[in-house]
Image 1 (cartoon, rainbow, N blue to C red):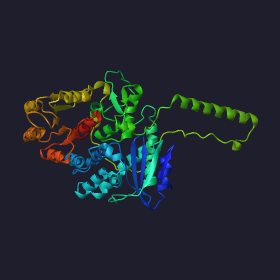
Image 2 (cartoon, rainbow, N blue to C red):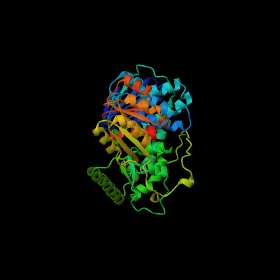
Image 3 (cartoon, rainbow, N blue to C red):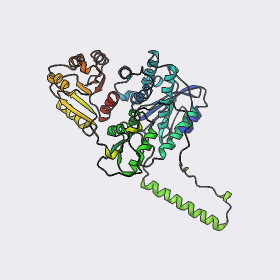
Image 4 (cartoon, rainbow, N blue to C red):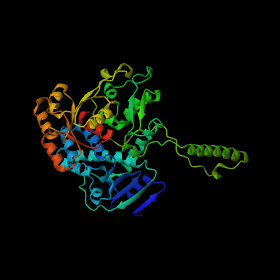
Length: 461
């Protein structure tokens, strides 16, 4: 096989199958729509797979699932992992850097969790397997791209080796499941919004959980699934009747998730016309052949995509995670529920622009935002409002964020309240200092709405 190549139509499935027959260690690098996939193989087995779109967000989601069973995976441990291993710049992940290729930062993080005994080796293997399945699922959707095979320069500590065929089988079944929701749903990163004021008192609609209603503003389907500790497909099945009725609308994925390949791409008018012509031509050909009595075996059939019926039952065993979130008595109809503000957030910054930006990003979400532009008076305001999360600027006149964080932490009311520094400082010294004064995380300026929601997802859900 060539070490590199360009495909007008990239065929990920056949490419992976070919690599599963190789006995060497290799790393398959694929680039499509500015997203880079890296799949590591050793003797035909997958040892890890990742892509450049928010790898630590992906790791966080899967660690959260595991934390339901592993008490040692606390929120503090997960925050520490990100502070230690997450690169400051997301662009670093798609550069042609041999060290990151052979040892991705999030893989280093998993190895560290094992070495520090936060994870047992078998638990780490389950984690890697789940991460690989999610990455390969998106990889199989690539239509166009370039690929390169590289030899890993540095040996990664082996956590597990996964059979290619079993992973492919699992991912194909998952994609078939997703296809049953086409064209209403095109990506697991779409964001559902519930139209409370709409009339949808149909008796055939299933019940929705109160927790789901509270969080259905701003978070994607896959993030909601983690918050509710449900499988994504099952969550979508619950929402689908409401989507069909128009009671739930889906917004497109936030950047950078919008760069990932879609489950379903809207057909262009030209493609629809060509498809219609092919159908007409096939019908006409069948009629003519029948009239001329041409035997069926002489006819070369027109190749068509297989129709997707109800997907077969998944036979690739997934780790089971118990779900004790909602009992049957808690289930209510969405029409009878009024969405309330579920969390209060205080933002302290002497810049009115930053305060306005944070309020704007969260104004339509389930958060009550209190802005404070005088850092000297911040402590009294914070005690009065008793927020669930504090966003704190580092560089302010009168008092800096480090000192303010220390004062807040000394108050027993806020011993466990997440405090997030909002700053332009990116140095490792700043991060270490932030940790010493009790900061829970770091949000680097300038930030996007998606990055702000990601911090909230980490610490409040």
